Length: 290
Image 1 (cartoon, rainbow, N blue to C red):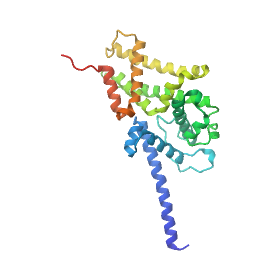
Image 2 (image 1 turned 60 degrees about the horizontal axis):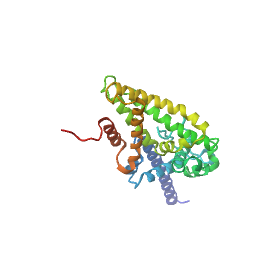
Image 3 (image 1 turned 180 degrees about the horizontal axis):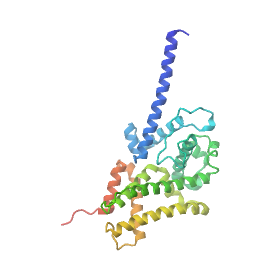
């Protein structure tokens, strides 16, 4: 092989390596943006894409290229595993296995949110995750185990984020600060989880009794955290004290969750939505009087 031919081949090899490096960088930046509360609309805007669906699909394709399923025989030792709040369903999610599990949880959430429990099939989840159906069983023993993981993960993610952000409020802050932090954390988690969050709201009532019983302790623990936050806000006069605390908690949490559905219609960032819903809950929508 002559010198010019070898030089051309070397340049081609460099293009391939550079493309892989760009893919890893893009994947890491999207993951970092999502971990810090950016919604898919925000990611789509940053990438110059036309829709949140296009951004999700791009992330899934990057994930597939960088973290192929370990059973397909390809060598992915050069891939850069990245974990985020919204894509790490279990400890060890930075490994290849963890990334594949995360991809399956996201795909299962999307299918669940669209079709419900009874119509969700392993084959559809695998296709959405760009994996073979048989690969799913390397990570989950059954459809029910995967669905249970999706719903458990959504509640635990929200609980951890809210608990962390409330604990970070400095002592002596304005009495509304803890409630505001909790509402912001909950909303941003809902936006980050996206289909996984919608799947919980859509599918929980459809589950078999034993599955519900296994997930309920996580829901109750999260509810108890919100009872503390709302109770403290009512005691401080931030929220009305003449309304049943349980109903008050339902109003606050459900209002925040409903706001997560506004993102694609309002074209607002997670921070903007969080600020708006906080204002509406704490101050109302009534204009100035007098």
